[in-house]
Length: 294
Image (cartoon, rainbow, N blue to C red; front, side, top):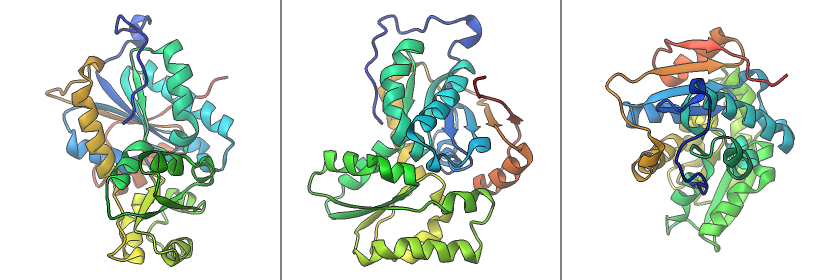
């Protein structure tokens, strides 16, 4: 996971007492998709405090303009930092592709210089680039992620000879958010999306949207045994674990009685119903919040 330069020599933010960092990892997504990443955080790093924020009210981000995506993401990250998060993981490929660098370079130094924001693209790119058997990789994602060319740039920076085939799959996120992941109609659409990549004989497939692991088994079945499909949750959780070891200055430490809180900008009943299904565990502490700036 990439780390922007820290220009704050004191290692602390000049903030009111009610906005100081409180040993919390924040996880943000445009909706439920980030739960596919968060589920693996809870398994691999269970002894940490977490806040999960889903901006379901403004979903899907993938159809929005780059400037709108940036503004939405900045509002969400700002909300999480004000809630006491030391570190925020943008568990959304669209937001990572369109907003992460600008937030790291412009927003953080002026607002929270001692804190960090990480995305999900770099860890997946590193995993694929490190595999010597992979010569052609496919990427599926939202229109905004694919149009940003973020995966191609990151992959070819790490491995210039890699051939990257990208394809937008805009219908999948709304179907998953409606609870249609297991419906025959969704699997039919998924097959149509993946067929062109199979024809191009890719060696690996990157799921460039955190919603897509809800369809992981179906995707693996369609692509067949030969094609490598890294699970984003496993890859990013391993990357976070390594990052925390390398950056003790962030002040994020395991605790004896960790807390996990969930927030959504839309209907909490729907979030809870689908969220518990996807997480395969109960969501006990859930609240609806407003993060928009008036």
